[in-house]
Image 1: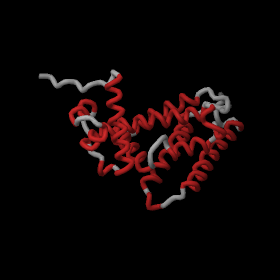
Image 2 (image 1 turned 135 degrees about the vertical axis):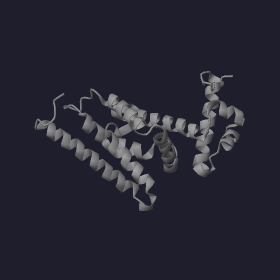
Image 3 (image 1 turned 120 degrees about the vertical axis):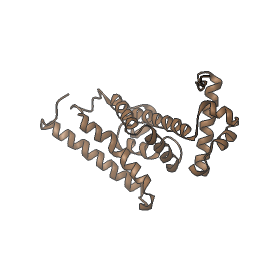
Length: 210
């Protein structure tokens, strides 16, 4: 007998159940950490049976992956909003510091929780997931008037990857006890210097015009 397909959460009740499971997992991660995150504890916190949980997620890793994807998408939307000058982003709209700060602070949760979710994405999607975010990020800035030069794939790669990987390295080495304010300043200096270099090279004709 063919194995039943896992339920696809299309109906409102199913979506609510999935959301409750993910929220429960998030709460446990925040309060107790990854070591105490089990499917039974998640089901209990979400108010569902363990059988119901397994109808939507085969294991803990699948829950972490879904949480990581949601957080990644929310972060991309936040940065896109900054780039496009959404009124909600406040006085720092459009500048490099706002984007660096958004990446450092995340959408929600502690730095430890965000690292767990990032690791889940990398374990499953690896470079493909970073590439997906990279391409979506580029779509969000295409056609912006601030750039009077073509953004080549190599320079775009540096713009979209440098801060992300440096922040992952910082989170992976807590023993360095990096000062977050100083780190933010240094990352801003790095990005602003690189953008200024791109602009200067474009002015000298070293980069293709738009």
